[in-house]
Amino acid sequence: MEKSAASTEPQGPRPVLGRDSVQVPDDQDFRSFRSECEAEEGWNLTYSKAGVSVWVHAVEMDRTLHKIKCRMECRDVPAETLYDVLHDIEYRKKWDSNVIETFDIARLTVNADVGYYSWRCPKPLKNRDVITLRSWLPMGTDYIIMNYSVKHPKYPPRKDLVRAVSIQTGYLIQSTGPKSCVITYLAQVDPKGSLPKWVVNKSSQFLAPKAMKKMYKACVKYPEWKQKHQPHFKPWLHPEQSPLPSLALSELSVQHADSLENIDESAVTESREERLGGAGGEGSDDDTSLT
Image (cartoon, rainbow, N blue to C red; front, side):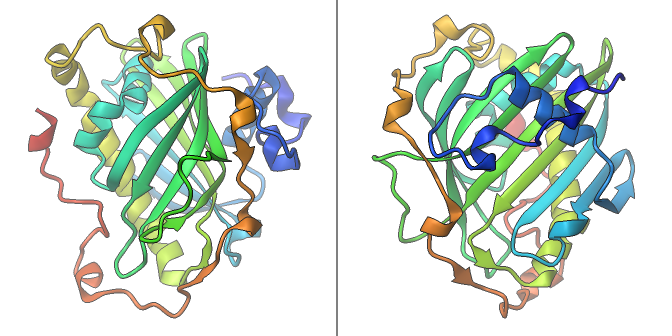
């Protein structure tokens, strides 16, 4: 596939580059995100097996900032199906066993919204949550979904969770045929804490590959599930269907990492459950919940 012409442009959504105001990403931001998904320089391959590859950014390997890239070949899954699965919040509650709570908050434009997501971390780490501005863009037969952290006045940090910061996170879905695609997941996250090395290693060697495989299984089962659950309701394709209230960008502000409390978990050791194969919230491979 031809590389984006934007490869020489600054990488990442503009709030990453120091903008103090919240803005919905434009075409340049989407091109920049695509370029970074396709980039190879500075990335170290840490896992490659059964069509799933994981890279960790070399510059970030010994820092608290967590930057990871995963890619998976999806046979028998059209790009548009994977795009639907990533958007369908009700279905995510079925297949994403990391999720504690997730919901959409408000609509910003026809292709941008604000949402909440909290997830389980490997035990005994504290669980995290995040408020993000998410935007999406179909690009021919390819698709991009990406987000970055924002502050919403009605959803301040909670005492029982650590508020993490998504600097740049998203998916690039590239069609490789009528019934096949490749997905690249790129995440640059500040977990707001000094994480022990076993967590970083486990993320790249175990948790990320397992999450990608679980996503693939969910995609295979999605068409059957969707036929039973509002089959024509897809507000990400038909914005007029969205039940969300509108929100002005001025109500939001950029979530800077240095304004949140850091949690030092660098000395936390892996629990016995984790060492014996527990997935730290990944859940079992039982797919009965997808029916």
